[in-house]
Image (cartoon, rainbow, N blue to C red; front, top):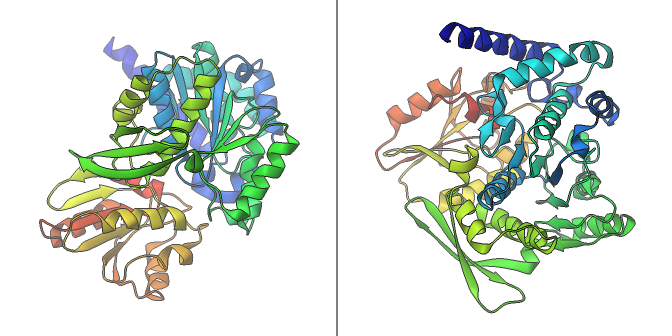
Length: 438
């Protein structure tokens, strides 16, 4: 039995090595891995007999919050008794985090068998890493006969590999400055790319809109003979507080006088916005006939991390000093993260920072507090910006600190120098957070 398990593990590791080395991977090499069409994804799905047409789904896009919204929705649907698939990207530590059913990661042997089966097609089609993993998720959800799957886009929407599905509901969390080299240099262009997931007559939930983006969504939904609902208009958070590291939010609904309290095990203050999006999505699903009770919503939200394994969202890994991991990696995400810092009791702030090359780094750096102590480092991927380059760019914004070869050395130095009541924040890149040894 032990020998069999070892053989399976070795085969799985060889498969992962093959996928990472053979296929262009956006998280490692950036835009060279992104293809602006769905041809390969369609070929893969056709080879697999179109598994994405054999299960129901919810499609989630957006600049920030789409991962949290996807996990929160999955937790609610799972709590309501539905066998729920969840496809997200990228992963923090284990490739299998990308594909889950009821919180359980895809089995190693499925990953191995699927890849072996597709190797002949891979040699012909030359797909990206993401295109193959999307096909893998669709096949797994189809074979396991999920009741519904939450499908998170990887980048953008219109040309994202996930955009071959016809979901029950489309969700766009928000529009912000990220991936402008691919999605466009204006919020309107970025909104148009994200709006690419909107399908004919399929309802749409938008987390929040601006004057710039609202017109884009209105035009696209009219073209697709559907309508969109803005979650932040239908509901708003009237109060919030923390209890035992849970975020408790009081929510008012536009068409009701009573308020509801929701307890989230994702304590980041920015989750209040994601909560409103999830609540509106649940409301729409209820209208479609899905059996989701209010108690399912509350219980699912209270144990999202436990049910789905979501990490890296204002995640505390140490007390005294307080050490927090957060995957904020663009200007809007960093702004929300710093709002959280402002309401968190601490003496001095230490920031372990690493970013990737293709972000709007200046926009991010301009937001960071000058009085913090910085520990500049880099994730272990080719796409990471060298810490030596980052420290020089940071000086232009009067941010001072030292360079460290990896995040764990940087974190160790921060812990050594911090007092018991200090706050150490690790942020700037999901890949940096993924490298932290916890």
